[in-house]
Length: 77
Image 1 (cartoon, helix red, strand yellow):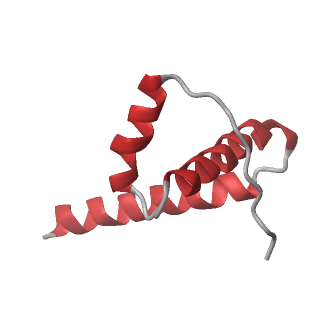
Image 2 (cartoon, rainbow, N blue to C red; image 1 turned 135 degrees about the vertical axis):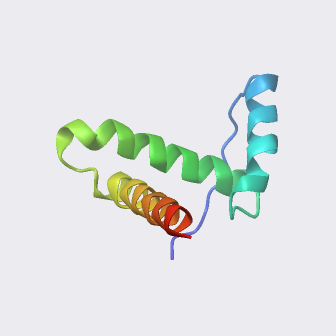
Image 3 (tube, helix red, strand yellow; image 1 turned 30 degrees about the horizontal axis):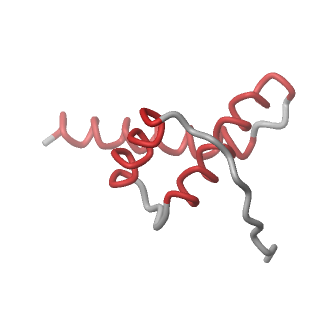
């Protein structure tokens, strides 16, 4: 496993509030982990056009399939 390094960067206060308010909806244990995941997700989104998007598409497709299954189960019940 790689060692983490500390970096300083700036955020607008409204962006920091977004991180804080959305963290409860994720498995992230820290704001750093949330920001790391967000960066990786966004980079995956940008890579869609380059053909290197497996890290982005796999979780997105997984979420779509789970939502479709849940919706079908609710309609059947």
